[in-house]
Image (cartoon, rainbow, N blue to C red; front, side, top):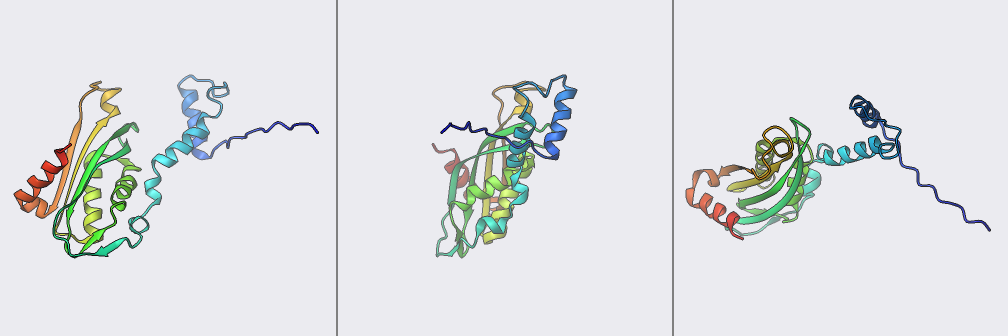
Length: 196
């Protein structure tokens, strides 16, 4: 009995892959050469994953993971890694987020907070808007007394092009409710976020 060779066929992709072929050709590349032959399909798969947040809803993520607990102390999830795509240049930016809230009468399952970050990060974004959307989503889901979000990121659009600064970082914050109105609450959150 002869061994049959297994041929792995990669999908050729859809409309995005077809347009990517045109882009590569406009750059002067030969899309039929071995290294680029399947690149348009790979690119389509990658960009669809990197923007999959458009197909996700807050309700799907939370999935009723809300718990009635008597807790009036700050809940903080630190160092949530994320990757996103800058909507101005379609280049990545990446970093970490620190998210805190003061519960009123219910808490959110802890794993849901990084999932919320990922949902908004996997869209074409601005860091400022990403920070605000995460804070507003948590506020909408559990109606806490306050929410604080601190986002630290590095942007390839600043590192690879433009000003070409390799070590510059950007910090954005959104403070809602008592995090905005109460200095001691805000200071406590910022101190906890900075703690290693």
